[in-house]
Length: 246
Image (cartoon, rainbow, N blue to C red; front, side):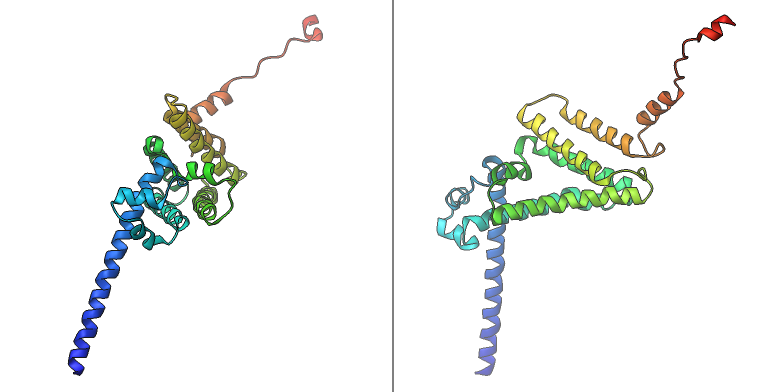
């Protein structure tokens, strides 16, 4: 009796574990589909019904994994943030601390933004949808963006502490300008379809480094321009009357 009860308990535990794993896998698939849908129609366009249709599931089946449309939206934001970190943040951490790491962060950010010119960026589209709508969804979205911007600020500050930027460089201003480049790139490339937007964004970052970086850390083009400016002699002043007399 005792042995049978033990075997039954183990079987029930194994069955429960498999059911939990299957449930987690199904939820992951739903979130993946929801993320793809959100890039097309926005977070606000997400609904249990629309997702059930995409997944070919019942509404109650989708609802059981989230409990509310709001929780579905938050789950999508978390998944987007996790993928953003995997593609942009963590690979950059392999670079040397300081300016090399900061450059890697921006390069990865540019690469991600380039891929999203057609698909859309939830951070940017979500800000338009929820900028004036307080609540858990806005909090989750703003929190994710603030986490990334804090990482950029740290990256700039570390580059400054490593001696790769000028001692008087304003790290908050530099991070602000980097963020501004990404927003401008997304707006001009996705909305206005302006040619050469990617190249202009790269040039903008080069200019930022030239303004805030040391001469030996600035790009070669920027160093050359600075040297040329230093080498230009000042315009001689007009001779004075006393000189003419002499």
